[in-house]
Amino acid sequence: MKYVFLTGTNRGLGEATAKIFKDSKIISITRSGVEETGNIHKAFSVDFSDTDAMEQFVPEIFNSVDPDETDEVYLLNVAGIVDPVKAVSNLSSDDMLTNYKVNVVAPTLLIQGFVNRFKNFGGEKRIVTVTSGAARGPVEGWSVYCSSKAAINMIHSVLDKENVHQGNNIKSSVFYPGVIDTGMQEVIRASDIKEFPNVDRFKEYKETNKLAKAEDVAAALHKVVTLEDFGSEESYDVKDYI
Image 1 (tube, helix red, strand yellow):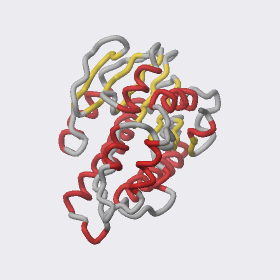
Image 2: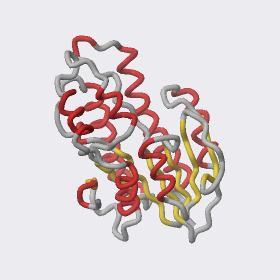
Image 3: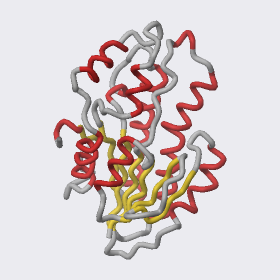
Image 4: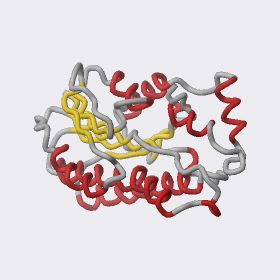
């Protein structure tokens, strides 16, 4: 049996991923409530921007299952936000902190909880965090998003070294999903061109059907995390599996 701790199951890529892992037991971790039905084995509701709540709930989340040594446990950090879409000169500290809490602190706390709960578990254990091409280079208006995704990439790079040193036998990687037709794209297309000069390009993606379907990206993510040699690469790109 696969136990899959999954964030963002209420919409977009997270929802599509929950459906793809149809033969697994999903432990849903979202801000909005998700019904425990079908393959949703457990459902936890927590605001990722509330770090106190996250620290309180993380142990409960990972203690909610007791897998056998023949089982597999996965953590898939899918949830994320692009806001604030603003020039550096117009950013507020609150905007920045909310993004960093959701995109960096929350997934890191979940990674920490997963490692501490399953470091002595003898079965297969894998972690994937969905990142972004924005982590690889600057995009006007996306300073916070770019930097938060770069930060979570580095968390994974450090985690890989620590897993070897500590002997945790946890395999981890980041996943580049490309440009997906989800609610995040709606936020991007609604951006002020003065803050985000590339907005017309993203509108064109939608108008010319260049946005990938969430279901297709979820299928690629499933292929990646279930690879026999998963973890041999620090990152995986959707274009190689779609």
